[in-house]
Each structure stands twice: as structure tokens, then as C-alpha cells.
Image (cartoon, rainbow, N blue to C red):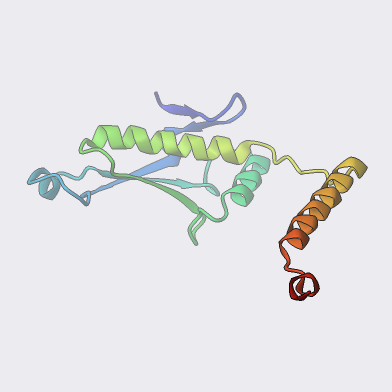
Length: 143
């Protein structure tokens, strides 16, 4: 597997990805102090082999997840196995790109229907009647 298939149009070669390994935090006994199991996947959108349109779509969709250099960083340290963490980082990365490439559906505003407006007003009227019934009529109580 030397290519990541995001969708039928976008394929990212492994040469565009960079992996950095470091020691993971959390429990793990002596193993955690010796083995670098944490994986950081780094993908530079600007330097990738993607076409300019796809690059701009990804840059706009992932702008909150890109660092100042324009790189997407995905971390994984769930497992105590470097291989499993690498697979997990690749899955997370693929999911992020698939989500970014989905077209955004814009909601078309609609007006309130007459029946829903009448139903809302009728329920308000009903609530008002209930509250009116709770009131104590001082004139009746005193006489």
C-alpha cells in the first residue's frame, strides 16, 4: 500500500506524507520510556501532488486544522504499537480528507406555513388561558 485512496478522484502517494515518531504519554510501564509509539502524520497541502483546485478546496475546508506552515498534522497514540498507531493516523487522515472533499449543502430558507403559525398561536393562547385560571380573583374572594 503506497497510495492512499481518498475517493475515486484523489489519490495521495506515501511520498507526500511525513511520519514522525516520539514517546507516547500515559500508562505503559517500562515500555513507554523506551519505545517511540506515538505517531505524527504530517501532510503539506501546498507541496502535495494534487491539482490546484483540489489544493484550494482542501486548504479552505481544513484551514482550522492547518498549522502556520500550511501542514495538516494528525496524531495517534492510542495503542502501544507503533504500527497500529501509524494505521490509525492514516485512517484519521483519510477520514479528514474525505470529509473536506464533500460538497457543502446550503440550506434554502423557507417561510413559515400558515398552519404552523396558527398552531403556534393557538398553543400560546392555551397557555395563557391556563395561567389565567391559576390567578386568584380578589373581588370574588373578598365578597
